Length: 284
Image (cartoon, rainbow, N blue to C red; front, side, top):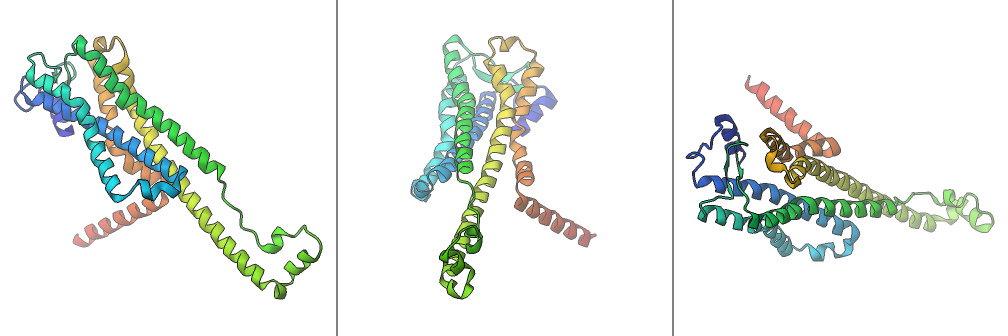
């Protein structure tokens, strides 16, 4: 829906049949469905991360292929199902709720009868305020869990017992008599290293996911605050336009977050750009 929004800004009118076209409430419906579905998907990802860290033994069972497909489909129909009544009302009633807003040069809300105001506030809380709270609580719990399970330190047998005395200490120093113990200890060290690597991967995944959610929440906050204000209709239309466009920046920030936070992504981007540059120079 963004190309149509940009066309509306440039033309300062709805490009598909003018401001009275039946397509304006459909565009507004798609506009809000995209935004709210993005939030739902982020919440679902957060819950997925939480279960994988908090309940790793149950993760494979809970997220089977069939259940994942059900969750994905549900994530995409959840927001439209709540917004559909607004679209139906706008298409069947002469006084449209959704349509071309002349002050904002955008297909959005143009009127909100008293009977619909409470419903709209519920939608904003359900799709904007509540997700921020859920993500904040779950990510806090995840970081606490990862921080509590500190990486295990790998030590050789004689380092672990260097302060001990008696026959056991002497036996550990004597390599000829401790071959079996060393083999067992090497296995423990390998297990510890694997465990540490897993924890490092969990931390990195948490950092990336948390960064995405924080940036997403920051970009959505202006729109959330403005739309919850009691005098929002009297605000300068440019404030609404700015908040709307800031919100949609979330559609393009994720690749930058991945590059900044993940060395593997940085390397892959580097290789892709290098390959593209070589192909370009070869053609020249």
